[in-house]
Image (cartoon, rainbow, N blue to C red):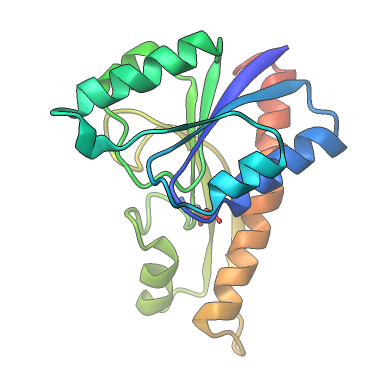
Length: 191
Ligand code: GRF
């Protein structure tokens, strides 16, 4: 059975959606580790409740990103992790992890890339006034929010929407799409 690590920095709703879907849909994959870069992030409690081991890394404890990622890499290797799913991980993945996991790191972005990359995809789409936005799952490479796209789902912006109702629908869409993509890639042996 393949083993994945999930990287998250904050709330962790995608973490929970993945963990629950793996269980319910019997996706043949084990979540071997949660990597989190904030010691007080709510996602840590979610991992605890789901009995998933966690590794908290404080980047300020390391002189360079390469050193911090070196520590993460040791934990990933110890847990025999095959692939990484970023789920609200608010850091740019560096060369250390990219080299160790080529074509094995996925990210979820709350907009239809290449539109609205960056940390505020939902707000940026809303402020621009587009009528359709959505969710993108893509592989990570050295360019931010620009790796090969695996899947996208559109979310229309309705006349009665405000940013909060839009956010809710984007997150609901994320929680469907990420597990579906994981299942598909595992089935195809691509992760
Ligand atoms: C999601 O909207 C994801 O697309 C973005 O960060 C957010 C994380 O939300 N990369 P959560 O922590 O999974 O609730």
